[in-house]
Image 1 (cartoon, rainbow, N blue to C red):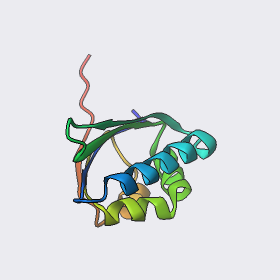
Image 2 (cartoon, rainbow, N blue to C red):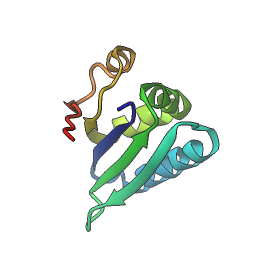
Image 3 (cartoon, rainbow, N blue to C red):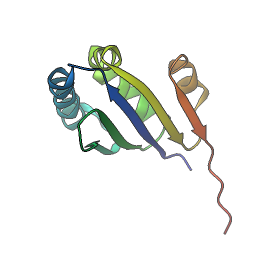
Image 4 (cartoon, helix red, strand yellow):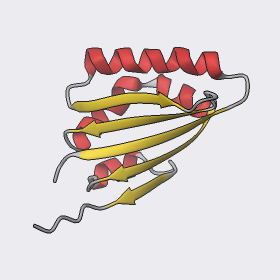
Length: 114
């Protein structure tokens, strides 16, 4: 299985909701215009808009690396105003793991029996 799925959790710092929404909209536009291997990229707020989950699915590890490069500074801007964590489902490449060192990631490897 080369596809990789993520559930990203972004707890928005107090007073930063409007800035967050601006950056999120920029990220969504970039994904639509530039990403070639992104299969899903959906953003969801909780009721009081203090937390956002992003459901992401990519063709493979290279598609995530492309996505990260395309987002550029926007990713850093999001990290500055949120508490970030992510669950990663699949088998990321060593290159991707190295590129995401230092991020709060929990990896779940694929297990399929048929």
